[in-house]
Image 1 (cartoon, rainbow, N blue to C red):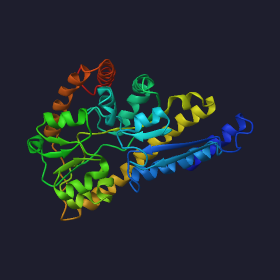
Image 2 (image 1 turned 90 degrees about the horizontal axis):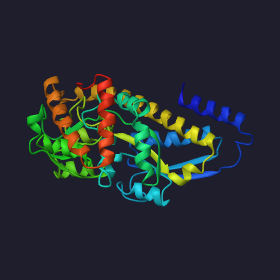
Image 3 (image 1 turned 90 degrees about the vertical axis):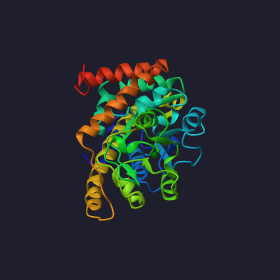
Image 4 (image 1 turned 180 degrees about the vertical axis):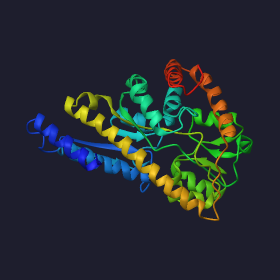
Length: 341
């Protein structure tokens, strides 16, 4: 089913079920993204907002704004709770300072080898229910997850294994991601995504955990940091789609259902489109003599995963919610044969 078909089918179905649905706009919301304007993720989020408008018969209008439009990237949770924003599309790891569970659930470093594994855990393994329980205390409702994909490291220096991370000035989101890289010997730096290019260009950092290969390439990161690591081995962050809890509770049931289906549509659209873009971008990079794509051996990837898993229990001990994430996540991974029993 195409995205346009999705919007049409939902709109027609709801219009048949709810008399007068296709009337005037009833809800006008501002959602702030953690991505800058022009970023492929941001463009896909804007397209999603348009599909929501169509699917709701014009009842819901969502303005998706780029990072920093209203508040800083790590302030959107408070802004949504206070009603300054109606919702956000962001990496939960940015709120690790409030509860380490956010970073653990948002990006359990080393857990996933592709985005669909994470989406299955969230939908069928208890992740969504857990996130909703945690968010409830902060005045937000977690509608559902999306994902950009398994990320690629960009680097100004060759990286062929764990030993090459020692002393590396590396941009990484706060929380578990930084801790894993630190445990591997790197020197993590906390920077918003909007500052990655400038920081690499000026030598503030040597490498960055930023986003997927195609987006890195499109933003010119591989040109100034010509030693990307692909496929990535480390980071597959969730894109949390949440909104103000009171606003959510005030919605009619049919619009709640529409929003949950729409976020699933966003996830499917974003993951598949970015996988296709990644494959094309990697082929172009391999044909460029100025860029060297580094693909870590399975032995080096296993070393990194072992380091990552070793940090999980430490994070779990820091809060009750983090322990719940640890128990739920490890139970699911064991049930799927993704980690040893």
